[in-house]
Length: 162
Image (tube, rainbow, N blue to C red; front, side, top):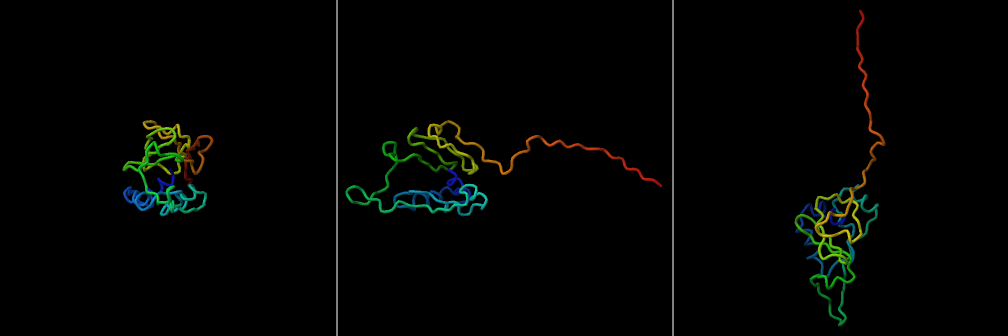
């Protein structure tokens, strides 16, 4: 999820059509892994917060062959053919729908302007359509003071002597 949000916000500058072209139309079969190349254009601090400084490339499935030896073709993903898939992501103009393939046929939509540093749950049963996105706010860079700061002022009267 953080890679998709960051890619939308930075690499694709809010252009869901360009993002869809890259992730869906420009591959023959699909992706085995999405990598940090999706973070191109993101601020260095954000890249580091998401990856810990590690970089790894996206990887496409290559040479996918059917049992009869013919090249595999992409097919429409349905509930009947999600074996081996844990998550599905549907790109919408307003956000990305996250579907837990083992639990539900639909999922909640994470708005594109969501902070990619948010902590998203990986518990599939929490990703139910019509329910809030199971995420917490991103960690703060600095912790708030343990106690509120109290400002005291003292009035000083200045006098001049002659």
